[in-house]
Length: 487
Ligand code: ADP
Image (tube, rainbow, N blue to C red; front, side, top):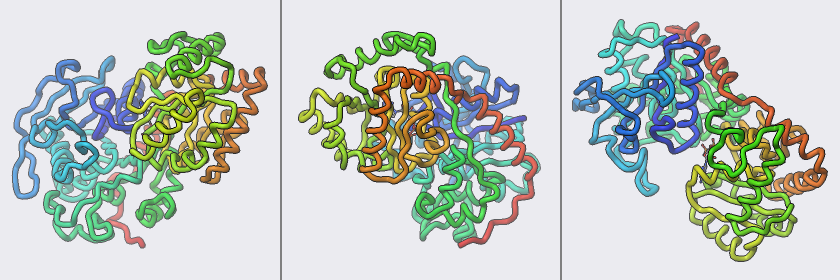
């Protein structure tokens, strides 16, 4: 199959979250299955053109944006270590900025224009290049317009006939909502400003360009694909999700075991595999040392996370004093909301021998935390897929999670980890207590660690499911009904 993955961020070139991991690793796996897969993203300032040896392949492709014509240069480089071509859409006015979507926590005011330009440039570039994909898999609101354009402005162009579309959503919480008048940037007329198309509570939401017009919709776990059809998790789009329910699928992300594997990890102090699992202890000692914690045999719980309410920090905050009175240590790596920075700073002062605090983003320290912790905590309010629990498995670190989204799909209570259901500090506390109780039986605990290390969340299995999904989309090409009506 010829597959184009349109994604606003791709590892290793540009990343703010889990989507970048998917967009970097899925193409690798598809390529190994011998598909002709290519990736396209904006050329942000963050993209290191020298390190990755980008070369310019097109100059000044004309892209209509609003009532102007803007120019796109196209660069190309492979995903490192592969033959997957990656195309970069360059326009310094739009993308030569420090952040991807925002500066110091504030969204760029012209994001609608920037990603309209990107989405339209994708199609203008394809036409120039004469490479015609069978499938376009767009990801999140930034690339959703690619799908809608195929079904509207470009629908009578024979070059674009018979291209099937998949819209992958990585987090319903981000919708690309903009003031209504910005619809003029998109080149789409006011006839699309209605609830069956782009309109969303008086604004436009670019994510709807994917949800309404894609042949197939996909999210990053089966459980999340059901949850987004409910008011609790749908962010106001549950009606649309229900209307499209038969086209909504969920595929759990894989993990790139070239990067996440304690047998080869260059950033941990002692490498190990299931046979040499006793070496994991050296990593725990190092982690304790670096965090100023006593080097003793108490359960050590790791947390690596954005410090946001989505990740369960409100219920953790409620219970933190009680947790500090259990016989355990906590090592936290994260950055985010100032109120949590303050809370954990205060806790570190009060319980210096119980808590290790690392406020920031540190990919290297993260590997040591995965390796050196006994347990890994993810009390998320919602979690489309979650990578932390899957990485933890590989490192023999037992996850404690809330039963939601991808966490519900991948962690089995009492078998691979500890799961609590109710979103409350008492349920969280109970799960932590069960985990530290289980830790006391060393033989059973070792069995649990070894079992977790043996679980296979490589991309191979997930990539096969993506191909099945692309086949479903192909079956539906040109069959997608006109915009649905829904409540
Ligand atoms: P999300 O994409 O919602 O943030 P995921 O669990 O899908 O959550 O992915 C988070 C990824 O980012 C994981 O690989 C995790 O290890 C990493 N990560 C999160 N916070 C940090 C941090 N402060 N430092 C290093 N890595 C982090």
